[in-house]
Amino acid sequence: MEELEELSEKTPVKHVRDGYKGWICGRTRMKECFTGNTDCDFQYRVQIPGEDRRRIAPREDLEIIREAGDFPEVIYEHDQHDENESWLHALGYQITGMDFNERITILMNIAIPMRGERSVVYKLTGFMKARATSQDRTQQYYHALSEWNRDINFIMKKFDDKWIKTHVKSIRKKLEQNGYHWIEDEEVKDQSA
Image (cartoon, helix red, strand yellow):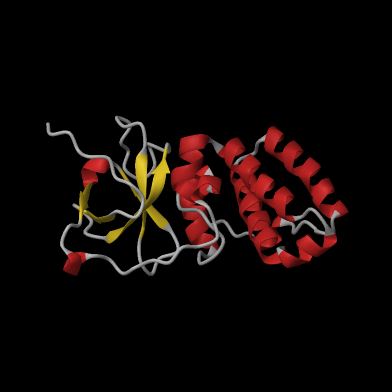
């Protein structure tokens, strides 16, 4: 098999099977996500023009676009650095641009089978703790906090795990000290029905 050249950031690529075009925006060690490929050390993150989420693919699924006419639309840099991207975000999970059902699908079908429900809840509560560090920041990030709260409630309803309940209880106390009132799960509907 021919050795494929390594791709650098901002290389224009096309996915050979799915046909999408984009720009390489980094690498991830989340080797099992989406492709099921565990034979590689890392996979590439591909930023698709017009999409907030990045896609992930192994090198063998990407071909370099060499003809100028085939280049994807130019993507402008964000202030956000890819090094700070969480493993959960690398799996496609985010608050912005995703509704509850889309987030739960990623959590239940990808993140939890891959990392376990405790790890997912720990990461989500970590997001909450990082945003709700003061009354002002709690107000500023209220929407994101309430969406993470909702996702955690759904997981708690699906998995009767004492560690998760204890962990969430301790996080709730810290969040409430900074002005965030935990939303109970009466709003969470069982999506599997």
